[in-house]
Amino acid sequence: MRFKDKVALVTGGGRDIGRAVSLRLAAEGAKVVVNYRGDEASAQETVRRIQAAGGVALLYRADVTAPEEIAGLVAATARAFGGKIDILVNLAGGMIARKTLAEMDEAFFDSVMDLNFKSAFLVTKAALPHIPEGGAIINIASLAGRDGGGPGASIYAASKGALMTLTRAWAKELGPRGIRVNALCPGLIGTSFHDTFSKPEGRKATAGNTPLRREGAPEEVAAAVAFLASDDAAFLAGVNLDINGGLAFS
Image 1 (cartoon, rainbow, N blue to C red):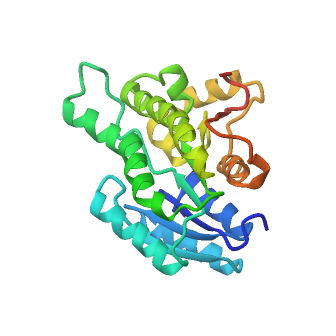
Image 2: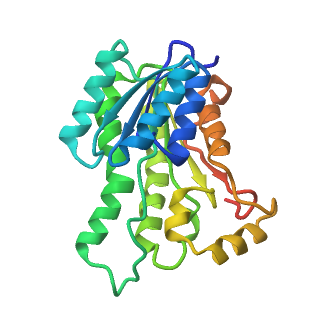
């Protein structure tokens, strides 16, 4: 129970990797705020599973690109759990669509950057007054932030690369306050993201080129989040940790 008496806020915490992270943190004792925007049924199921296992969870809908909704999310978290947020996981994000440079416009650029990059800035800024010494912020970036992503994913990749740089900058800024900031860079993980945006033959080829010869599982990402959030990672700050089965190295 590494997170007994800890409070965790997980944006995008209702499904896929977000669900796995929420369940893992709760299983280790954290009180978890499961944030979602669109898929209420999946988010409710995540909370149900946490509660059925004896854990504590709060469900809260908020668009993390909207400052006023973020303010409500942070206020509800603080009100429910004693005014503190020990663990913040900035996980909400997505590709929206695959578009080439010729196909995209400024509105598309802004929407992708807002969802994957600006949201982390807005949520972290709002939550920071509630994060105590010893707190941990974990940003979910991507292998795409290192290698530029696949076809039509240039802005998604750029948003994740920016998040990786922001992770390093915040580690320097917040480290003296006793707050650690790190990021995870998942590769091919078996989620609805790839069900939507990746062709089956492409996924099979990528898995075949991975030294471990398979896709990753959301639970494996969740285990890495739990590690970075825990005292076991007490001297890690500014790390962008690859979790891709050996497909690429930093």
